[in-house]
Image 1 (cartoon, rainbow, N blue to C red):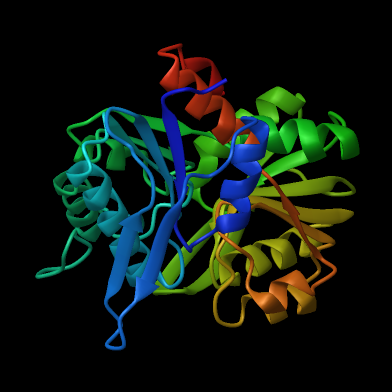
Image 2 (cartoon, rainbow, N blue to C red):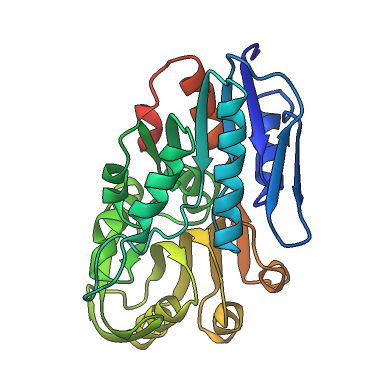
Length: 314
């Protein structure tokens, strides 16, 4: 099927890469990734890639710095091996929350990461549900921004909910994303008014919309420490919601996230496999993972064959 394409996987999420390769009816190309005793990463491409379309599948989640450097080194190795094109498939884009200056003398690290990726020789980037859409503008190369919405709709939401459900945005910034889900489910919309005093600490203040006696789906792009999510779930239950589930693309689930979810009124939390689940989360009965390998495989196929990718943007 693919005569001049190579798929490479870093160590960040090899299971997702294997699944993508399976959907494309091909095998991952051979490369050797090792570390020196001082922690330096070393990559050796183990097959001829001259003139091929190379796709490097590497989310940049935890440990973020190691995975970013591994991505950069793999792309540099491919560039120096004369790959025809190098596409970085980054399902989860680390440092995406540092997309602007929030205080004096602070960095815009997502822009720095974009510069590093381009300097490594990447000719195109594919990512899923960026925390801030304007990150696409940090790149001077083509950027395909995919959305997990079609996968969540077909694989979970449409099978378990009807138009009586209410889609809930956990903050004002996520209203556009939540509206897209509610439109496709023909469902109601509610918004949590939240004020954040410190990083990873949030306080739910108010609820806009009617949720009494209804099932609610909290829609978000990522769950990190789960403070916002669990606070929103409690607010919905306090306002009479019958059942509360959450749907988020990136299950980062750091720190006390899993325990907070266990202790919360959430019935279920659905995340995708853009980043691997922590070990504690894999053993939690409330957390379910859905694969987006099919979506990414279709994007890779269309990029390689120079077909339109826009229909995958939901």
